[in-house]
Length: 140
Ligand SMILES: Nc1ncnc2c1ncn2[C@@H]1O[C@H](COP(=O)(O)OP(=O)(O)O)[C@@H](O)[C@H]1O
Ligand SMILES: [Mg+2]
Image 1: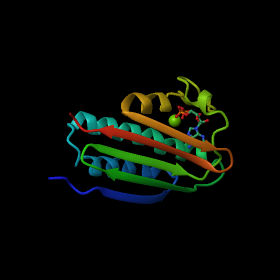
Image 2: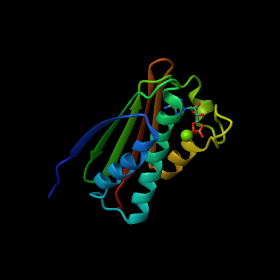
Image 3: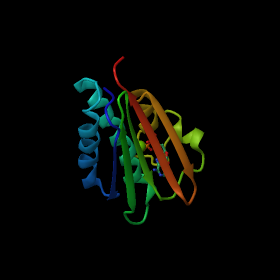
Image 4: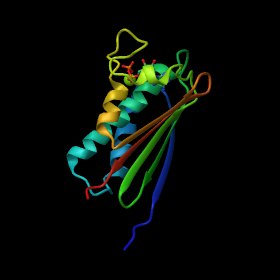
C-alpha cells in the first residue's frame, strides 16, 4: 500500500543553539524512510552543514529566519534549508572543495553535502538569500 506523503515546515532563528534541534528534526522524519542508522547519520551531517551555513554566513549582523521544509515520501526524503540573508555571489566557486569566504573555515560544507546526499540543489541570489535542497533515496 502506498504511504501518504508527510510534509513538515519549521522556522527558526539562525543561532548556533538551534543546530542540534535541526539535525534531530530531520533525522526524526527521515527515520520513516527505509534506510539504516548510518544513512540517518549522513542525513544529520548534511543538514547540519546546510543549517550551519545559514548560521555562519547568511546573516552577518544579527540572527535571521531559517526555514526548513521536509518531505517524506515512499522512496525519498527531501529537506530544503532556506534563508533570506546575503546570498552567494559566485555559486560555482562557493561549491568548489576548499572554497570559503571565512579563513577560519574549511570550505568543505557543500562538498560534504554533495557527497552525502543523492541530490544537491543550490539556488542563491545576492541580497535575497539561499536555498539548499538535499534529497536522499530509500534503499532499493
Ligand atoms: N547560506 C549561505 N549564505 C551566504 N553564503 C553562504 C551560504 N552558504 C554558503 N555560503 C558561502 O559559500 C562558501 C562555501 O560554503 P561551505 O562549502 O559550507 O564552506 P564553509 O562554510 O566552510 O566556508 C562559504 O564560505 C560562504 O561564502
Ligand atoms: Mg559551511
